[in-house]
Amino acid sequence: MRAVVQRVSSASVSVAGESTGAIGPGLLVLLGIHPTDTADDGHWLADKLVRLRVFEDDAGQMNRSVADLGGGILVVSQFTLFASTRKGTRPSFNDAAKPDLAIPLYETFVAQATAALGRPVATGRFGAMMQVALVNDGPVTLVIDTKQRE
Image 1: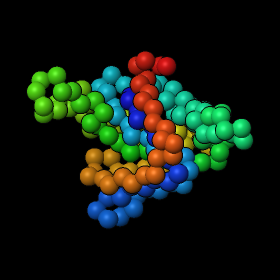
Image 2 (image 1 turned 60 degrees about the vertical axis):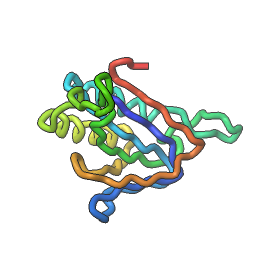
Image 3 (image 1 turned 180 degrees about the vertical axis):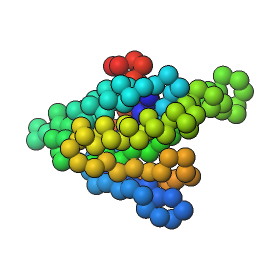
């Protein structure tokens, strides 16, 4: 799994004008799923996200997690995170998992993140054309890949 994680003051996602998820301060997670990913990757990533210390403490140091903050997590599926531009300028998405594998792993990841955070995680709608709005706080943006486990 590959995640682009953004620390946000607020974020929301809508489909066809209907809001499907919104958070105040917390993490916006754009999530791509690879064909070799497993539920174990999701478990590792969910735990990592909840414990990731990217929020400032009273001394102004990034020392607090989204759990410490009482913040939210908004997860948006994004198969384009596995795009390849090796050949020309039109991206290939062959490295992204097909929906029959990706949907169950996405749903499992959302459940794992909900359990790790201890409260519901907001989401987009898998496979839909979504509009994502966010106020990036910092800005702080990280890329986490479960194959690298950094």
